[in-house]
Length: 265
Image 1 (cartoon, one colour):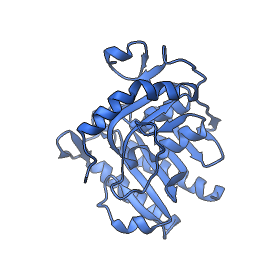
Image 2: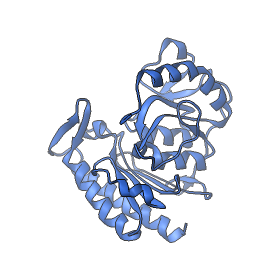
Image 3: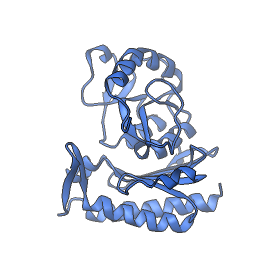
Image 4: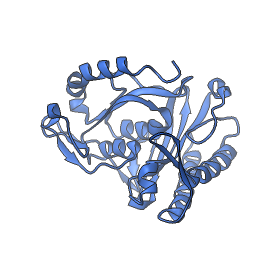
């Protein structure tokens, strides 16, 4: 992966963020794709910009985006863009800051470039495989927190079993919550449900390159460009507490997976 390509991806993502920022807190159309699944016209505008600009960088790469009809031909591609034009659309629509443009380049199932642009927060995150993770020009590292007790979790409320955790600010964007772990601003993020690859692909690389431990909710390795483009949750933590977090959540994860069959299954 060349530095030139990574820089170009950062530039494209920043332009997409600027477009979203220009429309933020203005009057735009919004609706629900399904109950509880909001979308707005800005999602589609940003998606169009990203597809045109990223497609020009790598014409042979496949495409997977929340706002584009899936094309099974992506499964044969060695490289694929995995994109969420606005991760955290709910916050975007409500005029809150917890949203980001998320772009990842996947090679043979793993992210090799990941970029998050969060202009409402004044943040630009990026990582390249083997080259570290950055917020702006500052290299970031996951925290050295070593016990589950006191672990900082982006959450509004905690279950009774997890009241020994400490809550910190929770953006709607799961990508930004994972990035908080990467930067040492949080120690643990967990989702125990089926989710979409585009929500986490860029953030997973940023967290890995920052030294965080990242798996699915069951502690299994994550891979991308799967036929259904789904993963069962995510568990991103400071490295020293990942095993303990997985053990605490194991029974809940198994129960949740059993109660919710894989989408498309």
